[in-house]
Length: 326
Image (tube, rainbow, N blue to C red; front, side, top):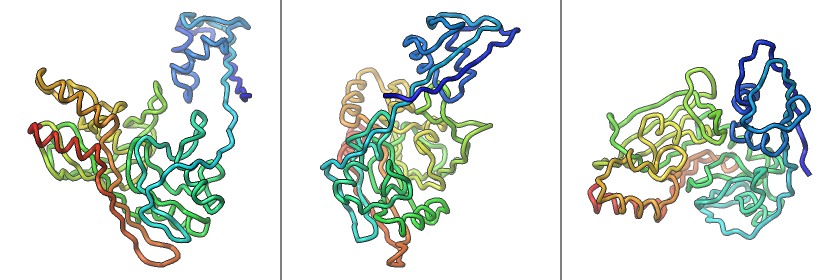
């Protein structure tokens, strides 16, 4: 069963002819153009009470009804999934998240997430601050970003931990491989980040709207085509490092959504493209790892610091870069 949201639109008398998907994309900001096209093809868009095709052109005074299905939330079940625990006490746990793992369930994915694994390992010993869908989750990492996360076992420690992330007293350091060389060894980028209208899963830099995002970076080692970079976050926005590096034209190697698999960007000779493809097979994700995490323990009243080794897939890429002098 799905809930249906109905949107009714009356086209203006002076509206010029325009494709239905383009017109609706401008009218319904939160829905991507691709999703609108799917809604049209599935019969969920009616014009003057009739189904239409995606090549239909809107006319003045048309009456449009858009039906947007919303999936019903599914029950989240515990699953016996291995977790790499770096630290644990009766109040919280620090984990080293593996790649290809979504942190919490979404409408499209209700199993195989970190939350499913945490519910198995800790049962009901997780904080409830973020509701039933995100028990224990204080902060997140992208699905294919590896590294350190802290999990709250009860509400007493959750809020103080969340406050530290919000007020930047908790320190997060990331390691990544970027394509290209930086003009300066150190730098800071501060922008607004917002969701791209064409694909809501992708974040883009905007001059006019979005949330403030600030990233500090330092080049640790530089090669002909690649740079090993340390990132320290001032804010924790969705895809922040990935979007910022894309904006600087220094995307993270292997990032499929932000330009990290573009052979032209890397600009290798033709006879070396095969090597590059091999590297992308080794690392079919963005080369980004949450390497260090430091925060104040609200109950033990002391500062804790943790470090997770660079994972094998990223280490192999670094070895190849050195070997072939990239």
